[in-house]
View 1: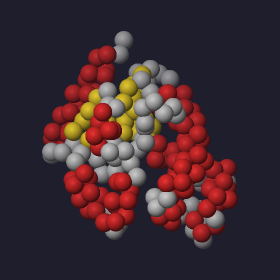
View 2: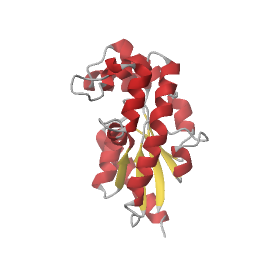
View 3: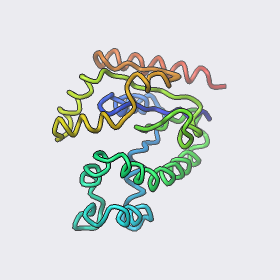
Length: 200
């Protein structure tokens, strides 16, 4: 089995690429989905997050208010690091568990916003990195059309992430999502064929 990371900054089209790969038969582990799993009521991570940030980040039903938590952590790098310290080790372990149940898969993609080469964590798990790249202006307009976020909120999220150029420089395979869906789909198909052909 080969494991590839699939990453891209907010608004890059990473999830769209993941969907196309899924249509081609690839097994995808969505780190965002895992992140939601590990903060459900009763999970140890949720208790630690409440201890760290207060009960204000909970909804009335006891579930995590991700929007309220995001307002805190995207406004303060230290708070973001504290949250990552709680969630990232648990996310990594849950991803490993999901991959272990699909040992017969020749290729697995781990879709995640944050995969930083040389930083350990997810980087130690993967055999190669696929980066979906898109110009900042286009990413910003896509997020504005998709999410109910103010322009300053979008910019704050974008500024909290690695620059497009730096992210692209870490790629083993680069997908450029600055044109139309046909171009994107053609790149995804070509990538999948290359990776499948490389498998014994």
